[in-house]
Image (tube, rainbow, N blue to C red):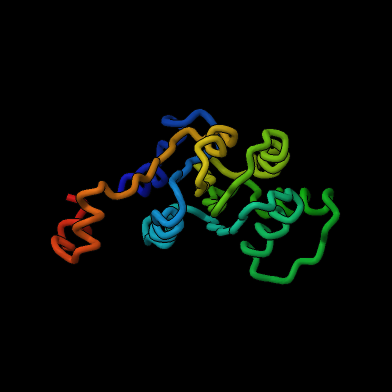
Length: 177
């Protein structure tokens, strides 16, 4: 899988300039962005490559404090009640503390540079080769988040859609061949 091999490349810093890199999966609803991200996230090679793996569903409320809190909750699997931004910032930076991490931000809708920059500042303390994998319906979100690599998922062609609908050639449709 192309995404997995890019994420697990040991010389990822040679490929991307930043210590923490944003990669996105973009496509309309129902195409399987989240499913693809789950396959990557759950892969044994990916699991062993990253010291910390975190999954956070964002949706349409891009509240930086809420996302930071959810990252800490997902990473520690312990209750976490702080809402003070300074405490969240300190705890998040301590949690990431030079570890190579994979953070999946699933279903991002944010199109505001300022909100993304606020969150990004909290995430830059990861180790070299850290990845933020974003799933979004909007190409603009991917651009705003500074994705260095974007995977645009396409829907089925009309011919393949009809084959799936009619039940003929279903193996050919699922094969994507």
